[in-house]
Image 1 (cartoon, each protein chain N blue to C red):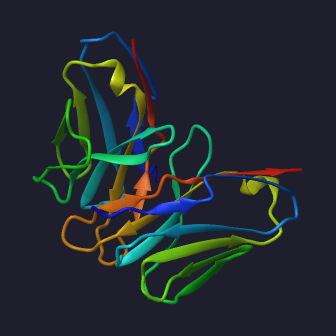
Image 2 (image 1 turned 30 degrees about the vertical axis):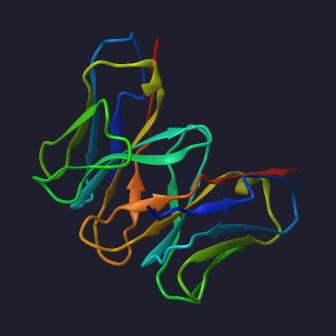
Length: 112
Length: 114
């Protein structure tokens, strides 16, 4: 069974601060996605990384896939209240079923 | 495009009642999924359909059944609801293009079983 551990589970910061969220596993994944979920809504895809060592940037968000494709990080620069939400990482193992393994999420609160 | 739609948005059932959650996608995706989300447990896969005409069990299938009605629609049925099935249910779809596995989620159904 593949598991994805996310840390921290909760994070409360002030507007303008930087933060990093981690997603770790002992298993290798063919792809790694990050989603953001706001209260009362479904998760929304932010990014997909598929190559070991890959770095992708989305405005103030930087996503990195570990060299061994077992871990990933999400870094937010100068956080804003609009970044508040539950951040979920999900790993794809390939194969014909296209299932994802989800971490339990990091609940981020950015205070004005 | 509406993306992934789910009905109903809210539902309250009594123990033992049955109901069907409906899901439809207009993105011509091959694969569809049903998840439940509980506090502290993350998203857990109930059932999935890798392609039209096929369905398979996920991590927590007990107490549920599914039907892939056509390429667009994938329903989840609770035959005899139990309080342990109180949860938020999400449907998702994917174009199933390896290795991306990207999934697109509906807005969820909030179910309470009394």
